[in-house]
Length: 591
Image 1 (tube, rainbow, N blue to C red):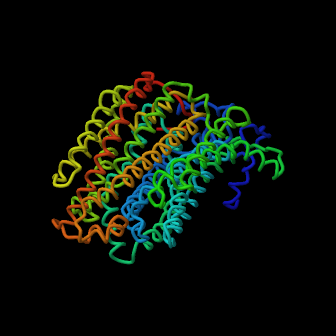
Image 2: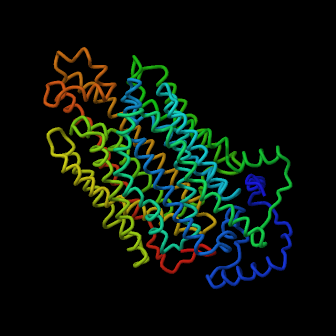
Image 3: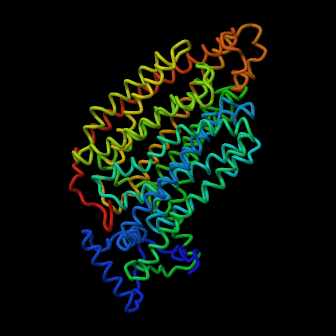
């Protein structure tokens, strides 16, 4: 059977009726009998009859594959995460140089606003794809979109194309990781899930030391375009083995008659209409357009001659607000299928987990958006050194998440970890940076704050995801994780917006105020280009003025980030104190 036959069931949905299963040969009956015996030994049950087609397919797949296949799948996931996190770290290090190459360094944060919004909202669409069409189809689609984004980055000739490439890239990157997260949720018990999630992201501990030198090598060698182009070739090659493993085991389940076969009976046009309704295409467009139009002006107004009085800025904010109101009214009174599963959000644990996800991303993107530039300009670190400091959070949080996963497996509870450890140490680390992220302060103090925030982040991200999953059933795991991802991405967009608004609202004025008369003529070039900022010798009046402007702008950002974390305390207090030690949620052969 050709590989594209995998997509032949694209018209199936949760409303489809099963048709008679295919007959099997005597040899296949024997194998099927062994599979049934194996699944019984693994304490599994039959497929969930009320589950959607994609959920039933993964349950069928996990019922027929061997332990070695399961282990191989996790190894492949780890390898994919290794490559993608290395590439993502390199992309983050290169972004200031991409925007500076177009003389628009201050749009560093703005380029991530649209990509954060669309990348996060698309997870809900992807959750439906995974639940209706299947896990392999959603995974390979995201790999394709990721590759398109990388190709566009390599070929971009202006910041607008780069921003569009970021949208494709983050949809693909987040979607690919989300697909693998759902696979982990499908194949792990609740008590082990936090540890398995932490295991899958553990490559960050290694790649954080690689991405900086890799970015430097491309910048000093063939250029940033070759960096993106190289990864556009490597990413799909690394991802394909996992896809084929999914497909091979699903075909095995189908051959043995374990997997249900669905037939919608719809024509092509009927299927298109059906999926436009199922994916709430109108609601998606209203929400994406509304958020983008409302948030982008906060980072773009400084590029307009009339600032906030600009007709374009006013129109964007007004129409963005109107689209958001239209989205709420459409979802309430018109939409046959709502984009956001509001019923799930009525659960206080799920709602609290989602609010915490948004808060964590808001505060992170506020203090992190210009952090890499600060380390290079104010602390005079090289790209590699700045990457090492910037990656302390990633390394520490991924390592500590493994410890938290083991603690949850031992205790069965997670709320206490978030409330009594995760939030207090995160607030401490963020608040201390108000004093320490300033010119003339030893970079070691910044590293100390990063360690505090890393330990808190490792505890909070794991616990809030588990809180959302533990409060529902297997059928809704993909949806609740997608909603959590949506809150996180919208939080990231809001954080980037706040950071860009603070930066564009304070840095240019401070720069003009502090620059010596000899450098006033180069004010716009200094503001727009990080390489121009770095060209002035350390200790010179101009460099000192730039550093002072950086420090004051960063102080406002860190005050805002520390303040928003207070909301996270109330979000965690809303959680139920659930025990996941003896809670059985998934079926088939799992960890």
